[in-house]
Length: 213
Image 1 (cartoon, rainbow, N blue to C red):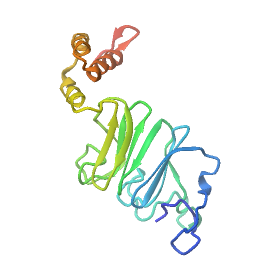
Image 2 (tube, rainbow, N blue to C red):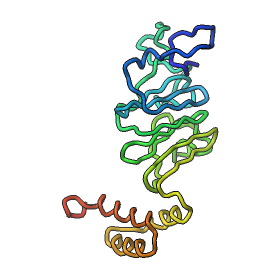
Image 3 (tube, rainbow, N blue to C red):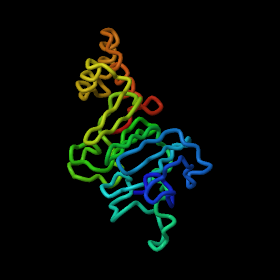
């Protein structure tokens, strides 16, 4: 289904020997992940490429009628499985599930797309997330992403259940109480909560003045 990134295969529908993906020649890849029928790669400059089957949105390029194709003309068979640029910059990590994709960007945000029947790809309740969708879930610096058949997982610097609970309880933090909560968190060893307070204060301040809400 094009997941190998080659325009043609050596043996019918199989590629029995390792071969360089010609379309990515000269591009330095720092992260790569394979799904059920699709593949994604992140370059050293933070660009995301995807190729393979995209029938349920796992390529992030919108609804696909058949195999993925970034072809200007449907009559050209030689461009059918060439990796397509999905996001030009800012991507740090990628994980491909069976039929969905997750990324983490340089600003720490998580985006997902693809098959979403169990909520594994996006916050939306729709069955398919055709395009990259922000996941409104953030509990610290993202270290690693993982995606399975119907679920997703994120490893962050808030690795304990105690810290995760603190982040959930911290939804009520505002600019006016952040300093007080940070002080209590620091004295009780709640390092993740203290870090969150510090990040919130920085996000609300520009040149020492609070941003308008």
